[in-house]
Each structure stands twice: as C-alpha cells, then as structure tokens.
Length: 118
Image: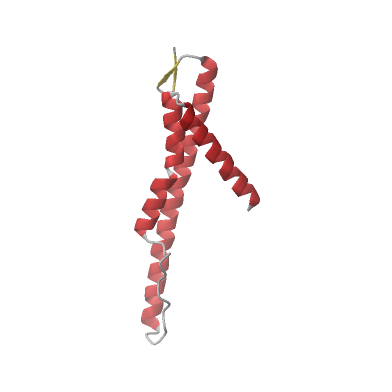
C-alpha cells in the first residue's frame, strides 16, 4: 500500500492519477474561493461608489436594483455550488468512487469546451 497525500492507494499507477485529481481539485477550489472574494470586494466598492454619487446629487434618479443583483448571499451561494465540483474530485479520488470521478471529469470537460467557445 502506497500513501498519496495522506490517502492509502494500492496501485502505484492509480496513486499517480489520484495525486493529479487531488491537485486539480485543490486548484479549482482555490480559484473559486479567490473569485468569490474578488466578487465581494467589487460588490462593496460598487456600493460605496453608488452611495457617494447619491449624496453628491440628491436630485439624480438612481436605478432600482433588479432581482438579479449580486449580494453577499448570492456570492456565498455561488461559492458553495462552485465547490461541489472539486469536492466530487476529492471524494472520488479518496474513496475510489468511479461515479464521482466520472462526474468530476465530465464537468471539467464541459467547462473546458464552454471556455474554448467563449
């Protein structure tokens, strides 16, 4: 039995794949957390800018917020749903679960295709 990042692995070839999946999952999770933090920073800065504009010209009509506005709760919910993909990769590699690994691989391939198209 081999140890790969604290996980016992029977086959050394499988251990290499498990290590790759865990690294990719970690990178995706870190990216999602950083993106959520940056979204929150932009949200707070935009809110401060709108408030100062409102105080400078009280007669100016401010646009009403739409139902799709981004707030802290929306950012947190988006982060939680975004972290499900790296969680699939982590738990699929940890538990040697082929269904979770398929979900992780298929979703990453889908994201890659969408990224390439845009």
